[in-house]
Image (cartoon, rainbow, N blue to C red; front, top):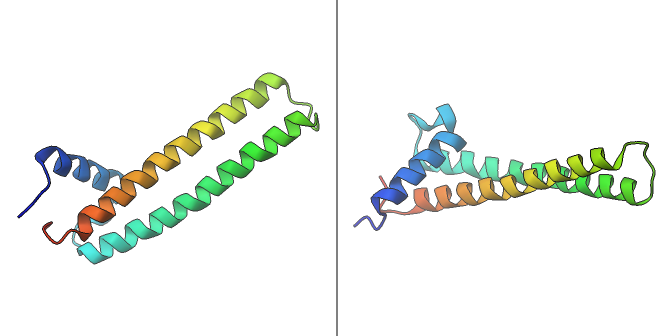
Length: 107
């Protein structure tokens, strides 16, 4: 018996379109899970890069090591902070999609 509501299935399909793109057609659930695990791992690298960028710019600003204005530093920090939030959102979606595919009641 499928315990997913219609809204859940629609949401998973939209996640599938975003995170699997063209790779979703003609591959098994196990292959989809493998691709999602790889994308989840890549998100960790992206997260690390963004956090390091935040630390670098914060350190540079705090110690006045750069000639960039405070406004530019603020813009950079905001952009990288938004990236961190979006990466966490994508990781959450990827984990949800992997759980969906691991459910025996699905397809």
